[in-house]
Image (tube, rainbow, N blue to C red):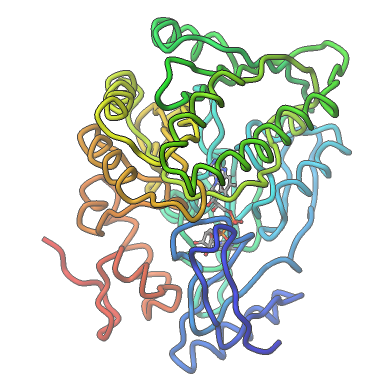
Length: 444
Ligand SMILES: Cc1cc2nc3c(=O)[nH]c(=O)nc-3n(C[C@H](O)[C@H](O)[C@H](O)COP(=O)(O)OP(=O)(O)OC[C@H]3O[C@@H](n4cnc5c(N)ncnc54)[C@H](O)[C@@H]3O)c2cc1C
């Protein structure tokens, strides 16, 4: 394959790797790594390119595991499924469904690769569920020297805790074992509620529903609740019509059209946000879980998302709401507010805390920095940890302060990849690794 330009979904990260390889066998993958190691090159793996951060950018070797995909084995009794890491979530879900199984939880799209989504701590919503990495019971990775390592809660435990969210810095993940559930249906309801009621009822919403999140429309007092609970009801999803009108056309086309208008007429931002708030769709449907969680995203945007302790959510949310009283941001997308269970994964933003995630979006091409900076300052006061795949402006030093297991992760990284083959300049800076000596910079 000749050198070619690669870019991420958001279009904000571009690369021209000297080699872009999609190995069909493990042996071929090992040989690509070995050649790159001999030349002292960087190797990065890309999943579906749905991260905004420069995680996959390299001038050297870019690997895609699109050809190392699919299910290896299914144990229907235990629900443990062995799956190749390059598998896209939507293909995984379809294959699980054919076998009467389903993932425990998902985010709002399903086009990512399993390894890409898991490696950045991708999450859905629901306080009983951790990010996707918590569904993994075992993983297999290829180290820089080509050796294959299996890790789990009981085997190479520390490496497992580091590899459940690894940013592709420990090696190439080849396979996962994922704990799945018997296929289930969800009764999904979306409805409007005032900000005041939503905050008053917040803990009830969070704890009495399987999956709960809400959107808040800037410049308004309107929230849109999105609630899902398991059900035995028949599938009742007129949504091929409703869905196309509400979820796809309204959210993507009309909303996208209005957003484009607001891009050129800055006063229109507030109006667009208010119209979107007024047009909030209400309705319900029953369908199999994987058909409920994910929706297509046709409108391109830039996104920042932070994890904060659940206990800080109301205060942080009200601080965010109040900045719109003083400032005119070019923002009309709602903030997305989700709730996730704490975990024990070293670089998981939800490490050791039940969490709220607040996501802010800005239409692609519009100025986002002033909005994101203002929100970052709020998140900083609430021990905010950014989503690894979404825009943030924190330094390695700041990140190290936020993660109690930061140094443990770095030690494991150095042990597995002493030459720093999997570190591109972005990760070197983030992990405070010196460019020339290729060893960890001592940090006090
Ligand atoms: C429209 C949109 C909606 C989104 N919705 C959500 C959401 O609901 N919840 C949420 O939490 N996030 C969400 N995200 C963020 C997204 O889930 C993450 O950025 C995720 O990492 C993207 O997966 P990917 O397959 O595209 O990975 P990429 O962006 O391609 O890669 C991500 C990281 O994984 C590493 N990687 C990939 N494959 C391997 C491998 N085999 N071995 C080792 N490392 C590997 C890469 O090197 C990189 O560090 C969304 C993003 C977009 C653009």
